[in-house]
Length: 167
Image (cartoon, rainbow, N blue to C red):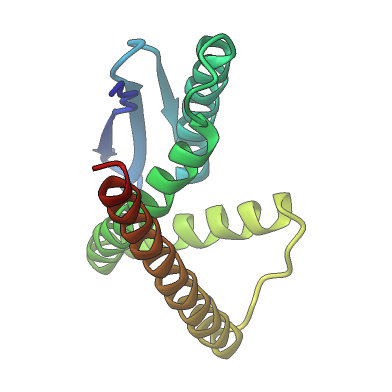
């Protein structure tokens, strides 16, 4: 079994001036390549992470073209499916904690989200729309998770049956 690991170190730095409000900036480093990026908007850190993951996926496809014994896209999608909900919850909890202590950061986060939504071509939802969308997405995720678990169970049962037939 082979593994591809994509790791990041994320730092948030709070800067204060004598007559200026505190401001936040950050640095993100891709551990495997040592490449790093500085950001003032969290969306920039997400773009950097996505570019590094995309590069790893491209490299995996290139390496596996000759092998053909596994589909790296399926495995990568599965790993992202497991990773992103946990990562998103962790980041949102951290962001809420920071925002709760700094109103200026809350304003900056609001601007970042508005810029990201605009970049993605999405209208900024109102709070009730946010809640309804989140509930709908949560339900879809639960449905997909149940389907994946059912497929994994069927696959495991099929392997057991094949093992018995081969005996």
